Length: 463
Ligand SMILES: *Cc1c(COP(=O)(O)O)cnc(C)c1O
Image (cartoon, rainbow, N blue to C red; front, top):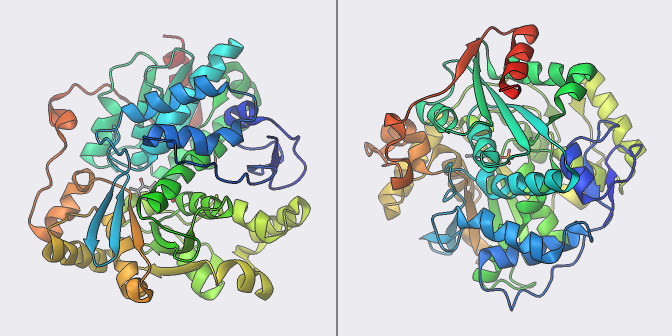
């Protein structure tokens, strides 16, 4: 399998190079040359086996099948549920797909537990070492750290905004006791952290000297790993081509829902998708009104969706343009100048209208939804997930008799304050994190200043 860039002018690469590169050299995102068909899963007996089967066509011959199977087995052995990503019924024909049984209690573990192991494997084979740098508003940092904390060939440096992550989120990053894990609080906002990371990548000498790498949500391997649970959920529900599932996805970056779209391209019996947003509703405005104009980010009770640039949308755009990279690059150029993306009416009619519905909910509506679900079935939802179930209800999505599955992207205890406000119940942390508040934190604090942060990275890696 070869990979091509959404902007059409970067070299084609194989899986391992795409994994390590993240972004293509033309600024685009990598996609496989074609979508392979789903394999027959009837012989698979676990999530890890299904995962290896679904993803193996994407490897080509770059990672031997037995090695890849073992990486999947190890990655999903870290989950505290035998089904890894289990379905739970919350209403008539309405389900949650719980994605939070991994080490850091959010859906990013599903991809990053595997991606960390893939990085380690490929780097070991090549005799290379990289320094992963990333900025986080909370969930990505801890999931990325946990994914690579035992890797000899990776150092990881995570920047987070001082005082702006939840206590649980910060402690999940700062209490990991591995010599290759480094966290630093920046005196600034999440955007400042992201700008610092970008500036480090743009400093070519620094980038090369440190062998900088990234595992952000545009990395193809993350999108790939997320395809699997759409397939296994369809299978568990006995869905068929005539009776496909509706998936509702709380999203910001379009990453999770894009993976579902790919699962459907590969043949998974999926009817359509509901995109749920918080007040940062660029995707909802786009799907409902063809308005993809960026606004300033407002903080919400679902911070992992506080995003106004949905970077993974570029992959769907490329498909909408008939996989014409030049056309996609031009369109994105216009977006940068005008601040707004315009899609042709026939593209909306062919790609968006039949596949995507969307709804947005502000904090009050989200908290009210947590309360409603708790009252109706005793299930505690985290605020991200609640935007999803609220969307299912607002759009009356179960009316046509299809099974509707909302992706439960975080454990309620990860956003315990919001859940407490909504229900008066404090969701307990799972036992493996019960002593989180007693663990020793290891972190540093630096000014919002490139030179200071680069000095931190150098010192951390020189350990
Ligand atoms: C990251 C995250 C999301 C959004 O994921 P996308 O990649 O934007 O689809 C939703 N919920 C939680 C809890 C997350 O951590």
